[in-house]
Length: 368
Length: 124
Image (cartoon, each protein chain N blue to C red):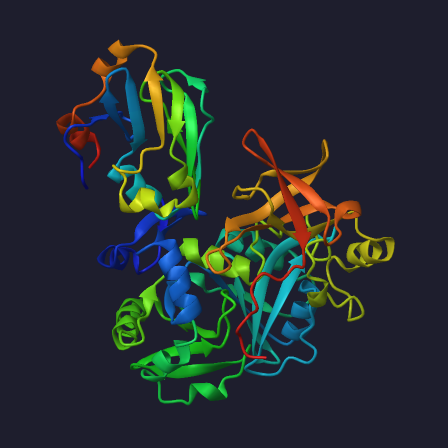
């Protein structure tokens, strides 16, 4: 654990019973009280996550708007100040370099939130592609800590620490310079759980006391600290993709089923040509959702068959704590990707039956 | 962490309760605690034969699947279907939640198992 990167909260996890693991080179808690309890707390009450490992990059300058638009598949054309956009950055083959959030500070300044595991790669990618765009690129990850408070009680708890009315921050919007318990923060109504909630960006020096304070004022609402284990089951049930599972340099957003975030008719962007061709020619493979019919838990990396023919691989699978079912997502040959089709999952030495279902496990409770 | 007296243990965190020429096998309190909430149990079939060290079953938590290894060699004569239907019982009562009962192939292997005192030293 000595060689791992650590967030400012590393010495706080223990106080709350956190079990520390190596996650993409970071020492982070996989669970505190238990994945199922934490998962249920977020669905029914509230949970607090340390997500300080996430990367933050600022792009600003005269051409910032045009450069961001060139980097991403979604479009910031109608994004307003204090609004957030979910998007992909693709490579020239249409594969995903990363998925990210873009915060618009102003027409000339954007705050990008990227995956910790991809931060170095993303930064290099952005710098390498700036070309003639007049834009400054600044990796501010070391100066930025992040907490996420998620769940139906999130607003009620956080409201106790801020003087602005949180109900005025709509879904995928944010406020800067919010005073939280005397500390300056960016507060956005975003998250990775399928529940209502906020993500809070603060200085690393303020994050430990803020963590303790949120748990303290949320005591009556029964807020709990949540680890990476439940973060993954929560995002999975809500059909939110994870880089390295549903997304990768070899999987396009169209194959992953996230074409909504690809605007082929906007200005040129990296990967547009490849994605346009793929859309026109049709997909060879697709990510589908399935439910186990035989007893067994599907997991990331297990192979998928139709009769004896291998047709794909599981991207994520779990015993779903909310639905109490064994469900998964798999990338399979498009020919087999029909709802109602039977597929076979290889779990150890067994071949178990599963059925392709509609790709909606849990109905998100985020604002519309 | 509870280490029950009257049982024998393996370094892989299985417990063994010997009754004549048969033995009940389960996982220890330490094992269930490290796994977290168990949501799935996979057991072998009756009449399956295993050598010491073979993988005989799987316990799955939300996060991961973990193999269970034979602390002694034997032929399965009974499996505990109750824990398949109620995996959480392994967390609640690990020493009552036996997984399989085997007919011992080589009774002398019992001597190689750990006493509760010795197991306690490795299961910290």
